[in-house]
Amino acid sequence: MSTLRCGFIGLGAMGAPMAGHLAAKGLLTVVGNRTHTKARALAAELGVGASADAAGFAGCGAVMLCVSADADVLANVRALAEVLRPGAIVVDHSTVARDTAIEAQKILAAKGIGFIDAPVSGGVEGARNGRLSVMCGADPALLGTVRPALECYGARVSRMGPVGSGQAAKAVNQVMVAGINEAVCEALALGAKLGLDAEVLLPTLGSGAAANWFLDKRGATMLRGEFTPGFKCEHMLKDLRIARATAEGVGIAHPVLAQAEADYGVLVREGHGEADTSALIALKLSGAS
Image (tube, rainbow, N blue to C red; front, side, top):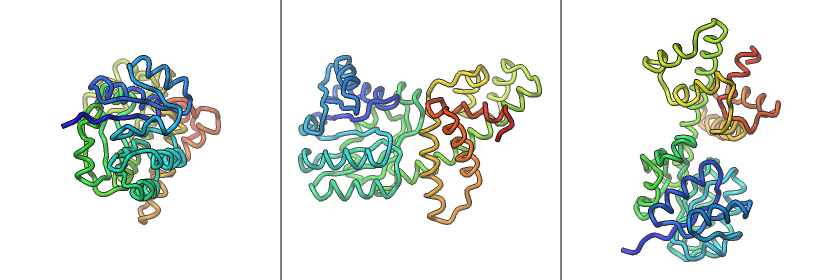
């Protein structure tokens, strides 16, 4: 069986290390990014090609996307639809609306090209360590074709259902993430106000029922006022808006989402959009939330 030739578009904090894992397994042939200088730099590092447009991906059997917004996904999909061969597959790791995934599938299907919506969870650490959770909306046969590539950076690759189901699962994921962020930041702000020693408090909390990823990965840094991404506040706000629309669409009450969306909205408006989501603790310490 021939080796799958992959391309990767979107080389941000998540995409660059994901592309690196593909390259390490000999599956990556070309990368692309909105800022082409970034693509050229990573391509030189990984020993692959770089392309400034879709044409450079024409020889790929699979192209992975990891971009910022719904419009970016659809723009890339439309461009790739004109150059990929029938039978190729586009895998979208972005977090977008379920309807966007379904629209992308329709555009590509008209050209005989497959589509999988496959948002990821696990943060920058998960991307760097190849330990992401990949939530796929896919035809089982298509997923089987690209699974070896996805497992380069996915500790768990799950088929959630047909196209759109990956984004539905990511909405569920982000509700949980939002609630955990709110609880951890509120709790640690309380601990700080009560004068508790963080060096004792954090491992104590992490050894009991309050243990969670966000506390483990961000607890110490947020208490030091270090908010380097990570996952940016502006991206969290975008995801929360998608999750809220999803919840409203099925009639689910969403007070956790509402609070988190309001809080991250404040952070973004106050100029902290580029900061890690753990910057939420500053809002809690100020008493503004």
